[in-house]
Amino acid sequence: MSNDINEIAGLAERALRIAQQAGADEVEVFGLTGRGVHIDIQMDTIDLAREGYTQGMGIKAVVNGAVGFSSTNDPLRLDDATRNAVRSARVRENDPDWKGLPAVSEYTTVAGIYDPRIADMDIDTCIDLALRMVDGAASVNDAVPTGGRFSCSGSSYLILNSSGVEMVEHTSRMDGILDCRSGDDNAVSTAYEFDISRNLDIDFYTIGREAARQAVASVGGVKVDSGETDILLRPAAIADLLESTLLPSLSAENVQKGRSALAGKLGSRIGAEGLIITDDGLLEGGIGSARSDDEGTPSRTNRIIEDGVLDTYLYDTYTAGKDGVDSTASAVRNNYTQTTTIGVRNLMIQYPASDVVGDMRRGVLVGSVIGAHTANPISGDFSVEARNSFVVEDGAIKNPVRSMMVSGNVFQLLHNITGAGHDVRRLGTIIAPTVRVSGLTVAG
Image (cartoon, rainbow, N blue to C red; front, top):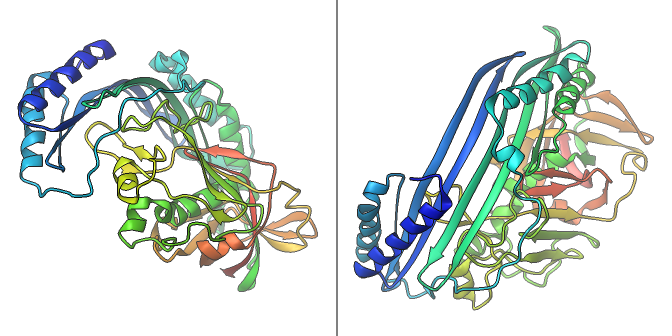
């Protein structure tokens, strides 16, 4: 495929015509072209630096309500891939719930999602930025980096369908992560820090310094008593828990298939008073922001939970048609080789902010968790290992915790939120502060 979006558009128009000539009732074409640089760090040196290009096209064809899909990264195979999508639709059973592809609409331009300095960054500059993380770690005594990575990319994509949608978007992204270790064989601790942005505004030195600082601070530690306690979940910890437990239950597809504990709960209280959870596809600089979702439905701001009450599920065009509602513009895809799924764009957790550490008499601060992916996405039950955790006493952070498991249920967690910090962080497509929760169980 060409890396020129105008040439990609010409190929997409050809694919649409060929699919219609082959008998498709409806056609959607998603074309992508992009460039990226990836740097791998081992210990304190660059292990691998590579530059890559991505380009390709995914074709969705609909015949009598049945959907077929095919993709290719070779323009010489585009005609065959397009006809394969139609053939695939023909052998599938008709779906009576299919209502059609999104129609042509007006789009709102989103600011801050494309920075040409990232899209055009040369590999030497990328290496320099990656090494800034190593320099930051070196500024902290008694810590060493163990590994990390840096990446930056720029891409352009288009969505073209037979209902008149023709949407082109340009995006950029850069991120860095560094792992550090501290201590000796008798007491070793590890920690990581990272940042993600659409723009050239990341302080990579701080990433390395913070990873090293957390590793040093976590060395040694005490054992905590098992039982229920108040817990402060740092942004990374609460984001990981919600991603693996709450978010699957918000998908309208899971609700319709009986795979969500939130089925039938619209209008019901599912969280603490004052809790607001919003998904905003129009957020300036948001990792999930664009003028439309990946089907071409105009992006919007969705209040999912308002003052603790469930206001909406997340819909793509298909699930919205089944429920007779509007799509929430929640169709997302990882690349051109896959069709869309339902996902969040920029999920924001909001609760009245306060000094959650200073207000805590006794509890535990959890920096991050391991094992959230093992949670039960239907029941919401989870049991995770807490990392970089500390005892909190009389409003002050005290000793590190040596080893601890945290278990609970995400739907009870939402009801038991009692505070939130001022430290709001953007963690990919989830934006969250530190959250204080009562009633979780710890096992030392």
